Image 1 (cartoon, rainbow, N blue to C red):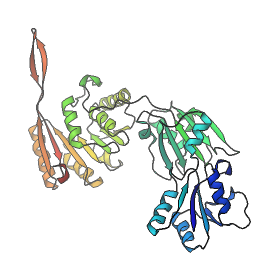
Image 2 (image 1 turned 180 degrees about the vertical axis):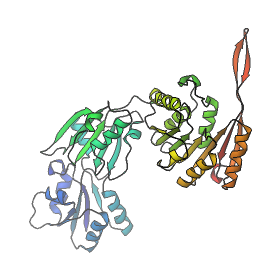
Image 3 (image 1 turned 45 degrees about the horizontal axis):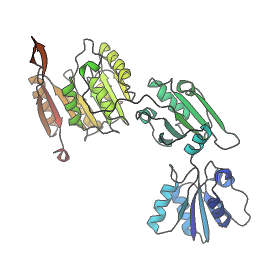
Image 4 (image 1 turned 90 degrees about the vertical axis):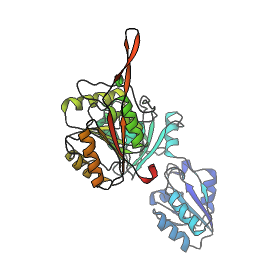
Length: 402
C-alpha cells in the first residue's frame, strides 16, 4: 500500500499542494474527518471513510486492501496535527508512509495580515490547557489555535483578568473559506464577543519582561512599611528552589512580593502565586507586579493554610512567613505535591528550631544555610560595613540535588 498523510490546509481544496492533489487523485481509499472529506471534489471510484481518532484510522488502514490510501488532516501535518499520533502507530507497526504537509493556520493568518510569523510564540489551546498570560511572558506576539472551551473570548478573558485587557487581539475565523472574517480589537472587547468554532487568535507582544539572574536590587521594589526579603537572600532562595521556566511556584507570606516577583519571572512560562493576608502588603504586591511586568503572578488574599486549598500543585514553595502555622502549611503543600521543593526563611532561632523539627517529623531531608550579609556605607571619606541580621534558609533536598 502507498500511504500518504496529507495536510489539507484550511479544509478546502484551495490550499492543497499539487503533490497532495496528485496523491488524492491516485487514492482508492481516503480517511479523515467528515468535514474534510466533504470538502474534497467528488470521486466515483474512491472509497471514503469518516474517522477522526488515530487508533480508528490505523485500524481501517490495517484492514484495508487498498493500493493507495490517503489520510487527510486539517492544517499542516506538523503543526499540532493528529498526524503525529497516527505516525507513531504506523512506525511501531512497521508501515511505510509519506507526509505531504499543508498550509497551517498560522501561515494563513500571517498571509492575510501581510506579516511574518517567524517571531510569534505558537500555542495550541485546542482541547488542551493553555495559559495565554504565560505565553506572552517571552515578550513576543502569541498565536493560539482555539477549540472547545478555549475560545478566543475565553482566552482574552484570562488576559483581561490579569490586567492585560488593553492588548490588541486579532481573530481569524474560517480562514480562506467563503465565511472568512478577520477582526482586530482589544482583548477586553474580544472577551465579550462570540466567534466561529474554526478560529485562531493572535495577541500583540507585551513589552519584553526583565529576564535576568535572580536578585534584583532592594531599591527596585516598592516597600512601604512592610518587611522585605533582601536581595542576597532572594538570590540564594531562588538557587535553593531551582525554579524552572514552566514551574508552578508559591510564595507564602509574600510581604512586598519581592520573592514572588523573582519566582514569577524565573517561572515565566509557568504560574506564580503570592499568598498574603495583610491589606497593605497585598497592595504592594499588586504595585510591584505591575512595576516588573510579572503578569503570570496571581495574588491570593488570605491566610495559609486555608488560602492554599484551591491552588494548583506547586513545584517549588518559598515560605517567608507562617504566623505560627508552619506545620499546617507544610502539610498542605505536601498534600498537593509530596515532591515539591521547599525553602523556609527564618530570622529567629526559635523559627529555625521549629522548622527543623517539623521537616524531620515528616521524614524530609533538609539543609540549613545561614546567610549573614554586611553592606558598606560611607563614613568620613571611608567605608564601613553595616551588618544585617543573619537569615537561615531551611531547604528540602533530594538525592539528585546532592
